[in-house]
Image 1 (tube, one colour):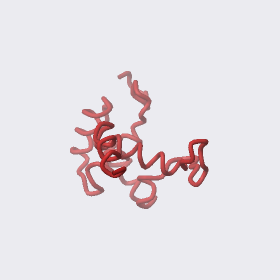
Image 2 (cartoon, rainbow, N blue to C red):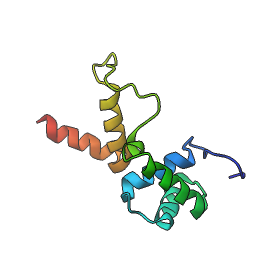
Image 3 (cartoon, rainbow, N blue to C red):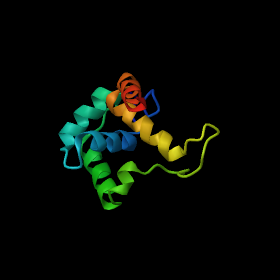
Length: 111
């Protein structure tokens, strides 16, 4: 990735990569563990200093900064009857465990 780019090919920013790594690995994850995660999952190369700075920024903003998205539309219902918050929760679960497992879970819960 050329130096100075803030996003990888899939559009994930470095900050978002760290945010997702912290969601997956926990808030006590080391910068080295985060480095490995963002490289493997998103193809993002970062320095340990950058990761430490982003982690500190997220921590100082409070835990809600790790899960908050700018321009939140929480509570707004889509035409399908789902709120943006509900859709986001399912998307996060799908990102974490995979779409096939989410479908299996829905099948079990629908019975």
